[in-house]
Amino acid sequence: MRRFVMKGNICYSNDNKELCVIENGYVVSEDGICQGVYEQLPEKYQMIPCYDYTDRLIIPGFTDLHVHAPQYSFRGLGMDLELLDWLNTHTFVEEAKYQELAYAEKAYDIFADDMRKSATTRACVFGTIHNEATLLLMEKLEEAGIKGFVGKVNMDRNSPDYLCEASAAQSAKDTEEWIKASKQFENIRPILTPRFIPTCTDELMEELSDLQKKYDLPMQSHLSENFGEIAWVQELCPDTSFYGEAYNKYGMFGNDCKTIMAHCVHSTEDEIKMMKDQGVFIAHCPESNTNLSSGVAPIRKYLDMGMKIGLGSDVAAGSTLSMFTAMSMAIQCSKLRWRLSDQELKPLNIEEVFYLATRGGGEFFGKVGTFEKGYEFDAVVLDDSSLRHPQELIVKERLERMIYLADDRNVVAKFVNGKSVPRDKDGDETAIFGGNQ
Ligand code: GUN
Ligand code: FE
Image (cartoon, rainbow, N blue to C red; front, side, top):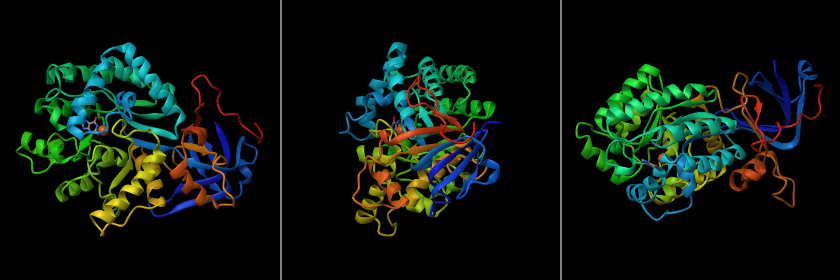
């Protein structure tokens, strides 16, 4: 049995309204599972090893519910277009390069290394259409110590020749081979990833639906992100009355198929109802929606309706892997939405975005994203001493400042499912201070 205690200022969400703060408290991990948070350490835990992070902030790790690994190499570039032009001009050109394993090796090394250093402990990641490169990505993320899902992307229409699978049958055959090959990984699991309806034929969706049932896999895709995209889906699928139906037709929209849909900026009432009824997870990607001028999703409404929702970086439409940025931008975008288009929906607050980045997105992985007893023990330790301040701040204010001001350099330790993740590839596990070992 591997047991340890962590001591510090512990912050976690009870729900999307309540942030719990225990000043210089204790949180206990046993075989990767949280045993609870304490103001005073119970007698039975007093002799177990202790990581003493007195006065630092201890938070659950963040979940990035939507990120494209191959796009990390052009983040911060080409932000002058809307979705469909951006895909054709920049994205597909870059993703085609991953056919070359040597390129994938270099690019995914950088991506995995930066993921390792980040405050993210869980992620749902898009690869490219290429099996070999996607397996390499899975290997590197496994090495980087995070837990997550990675998808080999499917696209067999409306894509340039250099990034278009030969047929639905070929795409399905490659996908099945990749699913089988990915069994070698422990913490990184496969997720079906039809890119979005415009790039997937009906035959391909049928094939993927069969694979979904055969292997009981989750799926991830994009939904109602941009007006041009939505109009195009309506043309391509005249038998549907809203975009989500085009996934639902194939049984890949929640219910028995665990589903993440990125964006949902312009979802209709019928689409929202179906997502709610069928338990579809929404990945809210505020920076991406800003950069591609997509719009601002009505997150307050989704939260009030009790929908399943988390945050995504959506690199490279989002420029950074930082979930701190995703949180602060979720607040900022909600304010602009409130001011400019809909006074009914009040802006988001700190409690809500912290919930979205931890517990909200973590729910896709089961009991993940908080320090309640029985949850998987994912934790990040933040040192905010570099953010100098002339007076004492309370812990909640310090967390609030981290949300707006922190980056990787504030992360001093990270634990995933009870295991310490060294900051550097060949680094040592975090040393245990104090306690009896
Ligand atoms: N829709 C289809 N592909 C993509 C992508 O790569 N990024 C974003 N933001 N939307 C998409
Ligand atoms: Fe995306």
